[in-house]
Length: 260
Image (cartoon, rainbow, N blue to C red; front, side, top):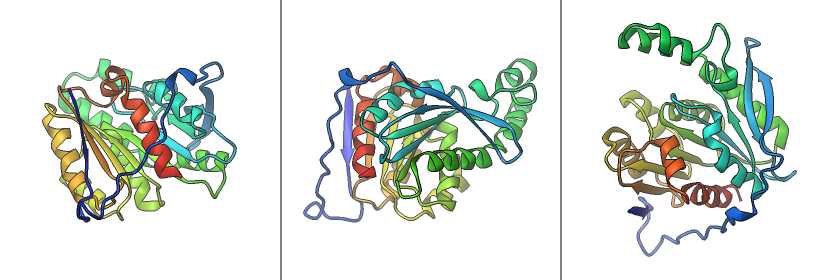
């Protein structure tokens, strides 16, 4: 069972007007030429890889950030739907993941070589310490592709929600999609210090940490276009997209609305 919660924390019921979303026809998505494999350099010259979903020449952009267990491939359906709606989408492989793995940076190597959870966490923390600048490089690549005047939104899942917040602290973002956020107290405070930005929160009712975080941040957000969607079960970001057929369609419609 899927439930929708549409709420405007700072407005009364009389003041709130539910936005109208453009409908997406999933059958019309042309997958033939998508995605395009692209590369660009981080500030230390490390080569980052990404999937680029080409939208319209004057279309807005969406930067897609995967979680700490998957890669850019988890956004294939969403990227294709966004492109069909004229939105240009860039799904980055984080350093150490997917096509952005190298001999020095590899999450797979860390998983197989470390002997205990403490060592694993330390190695992953060292790897993710590069991500803030890598995400900025990805944003700049997307900005150069679509031009200076077009709006850009973010989709982030799990641990990458923190990278989305860090980027939004530096650059004005049009809107967020936040899937199963994994954040500690300090990271949530960083989000709360942002100006109100339209945000679409997605969580599972039985995954307590991300559900409670999503509800806390949703309640804090004062933008009238902000939305929360809660699913039964314990699925998180990637699995929510994979197992719930219409979630990507809902996200595409909402992003299309906030970008226009």
